[in-house]
Image 1 (cartoon, rainbow, N blue to C red):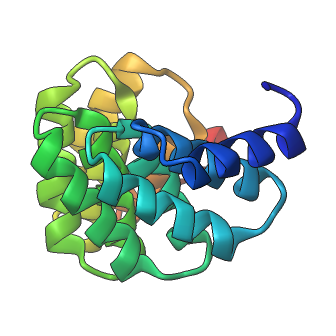
Image 2: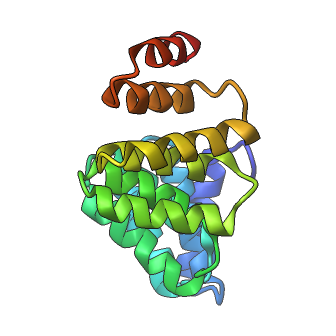
Length: 186
C-alpha cells in the first residue's frame, strides 16, 4: 500500500472495523494516511487512538507531536513526548525534540534539562548540542552556550543554525568581532 494513500486509508479503516488484533498499527497507518491527505484533525485522532491501543509504537509519538507543534499546540506536543518517555526512557531523539518544543513554549530551563539528556543519550549527534546551545542562550548562560555550540560543530562543522546560536552567545557577551564572523558563516 506504500505510495497509495487512499488504499492505505481504506485498508486500515477496514482492519479497524473488523476488530484487528493490531489496532495500534492500524490506527497508526490510518493516521499516516490522513496526515498525507492533509486532514490533520483526523490524523491527530487516529494517532491518539494508536497510542491508546498500543503505546509501544515509537514513531506515532514523534509524528503526533510534530502535528501539534505545527498547529502551535506546544503543550500537547510536549505532553505527547513526555508520555513517550514513559515507554522509551533512553531514546535521545525524544529529548532532542522536546527540548526544541520547550524552547518554542518559552520554557528555557526545561529546554536546557531536556537537551542535556539528549546530549548524554546521543553524544555523537549534533542536534542535542545545538538545542542545548540555543536553550543556554535563552537562560543567558552564554559561556556554556558557546561550549555546547562548539560541541555541536565538532560533530557537524558548518551547521548554520549552530553557528547562528554561537554568534548570538558571543554577541551577548560583547564579542562583536567573533559574533559577526559566526553570523556570516551561518
